[in-house]
Image (tube, rainbow, N blue to C red; front, side, top):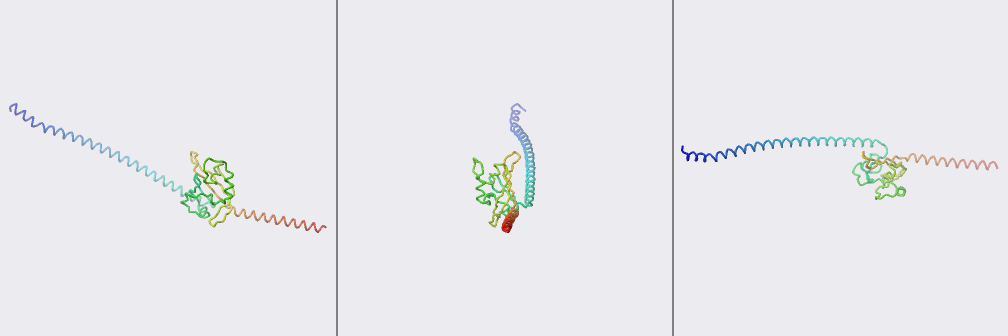
Length: 225
């Protein structure tokens, strides 16, 4: 083979050699891409598994909170007194069966309801007059009364679903979270109608006895003359 022919053959092999190099480079790049895709897929799977675990934990936590809320509701429902839980603005959050029946309210969906209107206006006015000045608008006089001292205890008449006001002993205590931030208050009301009726009967019996004693004394005094 003469030099000219050898040069021609090498020139003819050039494109094939270049194509082989490009194919090898593409194979290497594809392999690297496959490894990267595999790594990304494993990372994505790990993230999805972690998200699934977190979702399961949240679901379990939600179910625990639901169970606790149900248990708490059963506990307050077992209490014969009226029990109402209000938020920081005095709006009803929870109430037990006794409170729902007496006040004529549903057990849920009372977010825009406050307890104050069930008290007579004169008693609310007396509570408001006893409050110290505050720099914010008062939405619930009863809650603000408890807030002024941490708790409140007093006798008040509560209007029932039949429109009749009956005497109750109200106790309102503020609620705080672990950080000490106020979360609202729990209000319990004990029906003291029987006690008040007994007190009225005792007063009447005492007055009757005093009148009888007076009449007897007067009779004996007249007889002695």
